[in-house]
Image (cartoon, rainbow, N blue to C red; front, side):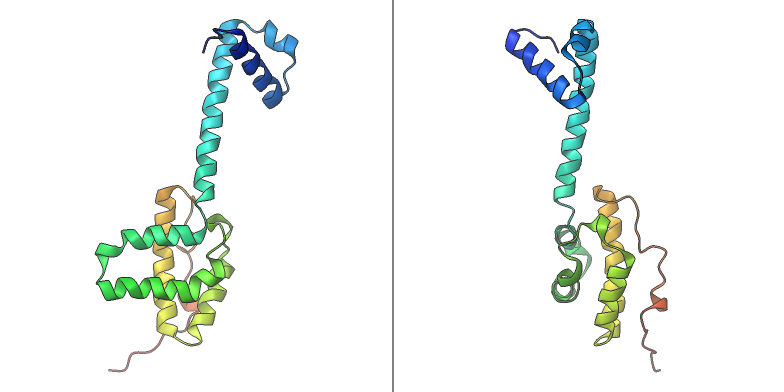
Length: 165
């Protein structure tokens, strides 16, 4: 990255002083190729930060759910696919939909599912399975690093209905 004109030079100098609190003397003492290498590294770093912020902006649970739901369309019958959407919109999204997925605690999910299990234990059990799938999807999309539900045994907080034969 060469400084082919005076405006470019002063813009670069100003950016380095603002970002990293270098003095003008320190920057002028750098060899031109040192400054160019540093500027290239700084630009790469800023690009990475911008990409992370873009992911962060889309990381609320509601956005992730709808992306997951769209990808799930071919994996179940149309009625079942719509059921998932309605159940999440009614039972999950009002509680955790606006939270960033990385900020959702296991207790948030447990409380949501316990509330649902009071009226429909079977639905709460299904929602738990779908939530695990959504968290796996979020890992693949780069929103989170770990599926917090993988090591949770739903039988510790959800009642399962006994099947009569």
